[in-house]
Image (cartoon, rainbow, N blue to C red; front, side):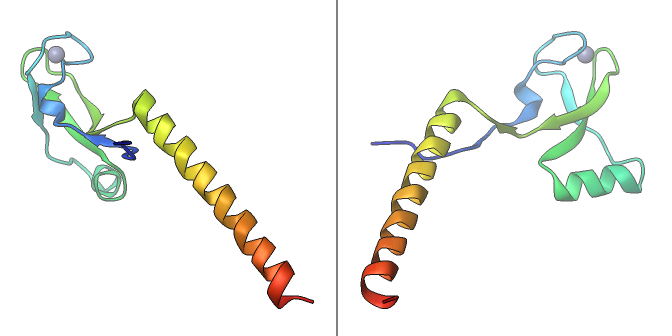
Length: 96
Ligand SMILES: [Zn+2]
């Protein structure tokens, strides 16, 4: 079975802190201003704070892996084959 997922959802709270590298210390942080709220709504990034060292920043709940690239490649091939077939049918049967 081919896996066609592009993004993998994970919980950033189990990731290690980018600053002190300790795992499991990240906690969701409340948005401080309008800009942070907008980023939170329109992107997969949320603000997190480290309970150990006080680091605060953005973390994404989604991971992009090498399997993601494989899935994108398969989607690209499907897209090219479909567009070729559509243009072939259009030229052959509809546009004369
Ligand atoms: Zn930390």
